[in-house]
Length: 384
Ligand SMILES: Nc1ncnc2c1ncn2[C@@H]1O[C@H](COP(=O)(O)OP(=O)(O)OP(=O)(O)O)[C@@H](O)[C@H]1O
Ligand SMILES: [Mg+2]
Image (cartoon, rainbow, N blue to C red; front, side):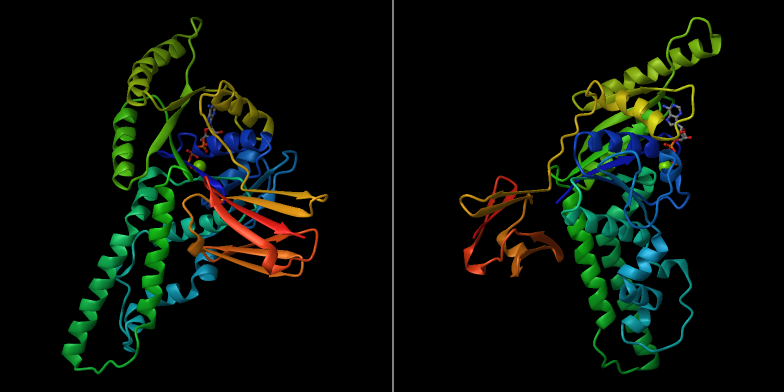
């Protein structure tokens, strides 16, 4: 399982730049890194100066780095056709075959697009292909709206049920059909709850706020911290971007610098005890790998952000002893969440419905496979 790093913050503060720069750094540490963007404007591709597709695309020129731009509509159609149907036609999902105008805003489930984006994201997290996943998020407000989805789904479902009951009385319809659509919604709700638990677990998820030292920035980040905390998601720190350096030769710069310093002092206080990176404003455009490396040196160089990576999968073969070892990062997992299957020389490891295939250098005898959870890791040994 990968570690997940999220950068949230207001529009235009440097979330995409920060995500790309930190990704370059983690990749340089030998960690397989995937950056996921949900921005339809393809800003991540612009930042890297590379074309990025809607499947993980290697970033040419940077080892261990991939990026993917998700297409929310496509994601929705592919991942959740039944859910889409259930939502597009809620009454049908509830067993009513009436043609009704369901186009009102209050019939829509709010936050659904973000929820599907997170679902898409988690499928990468749950695979063993990457050690670190960085999510270039939408502005904080949007991200947060999604987090209240389990409650919203509940309320939405009960509203639809009430609606159905009224309609039933009104038209004295007999509804005998099973609520298959409702089942899909319930399943989806459970999935969202799982995502929320994952986001709230410090072992998996690190949330950072990106901000610019200006008026209201402190209040806004305080508000974001409080709301995130109410969902159980701790903020690990912040990246203060676009800091104007001292410059005696430039009056405008000096005055901006002085006003920023006041806000910066307040931000340092607000984030005391947490990780804080301070990034200057660059006089060139941040575009392409080289300029991102300059940003990355500022964010990570002096270890201002303390990002610790773990290999999500390590394997080793002791040919002499005939023992094959696999070690997978699976914190908070229980044996009941896990399924192990063997097929020839392939070990199929399934967790939360996502299967990873591990190749073993010999044919596996299922009786000679041992699995044990220890210190956030799943250790598997296969005897030849
Ligand atoms: N430290 C910096 N110095 C100079 N330019 C910067 C710096 N940080 C970001 N930029 C530039 O500012 C612009 C906005 O940055 P970015 O796209 O990273 O913001 P964002 O928070 O992702 O925006 P959005 O909310 O629209 O997604 C970009 O053109 C980027 O190159
Ligand atoms: Mg962006």
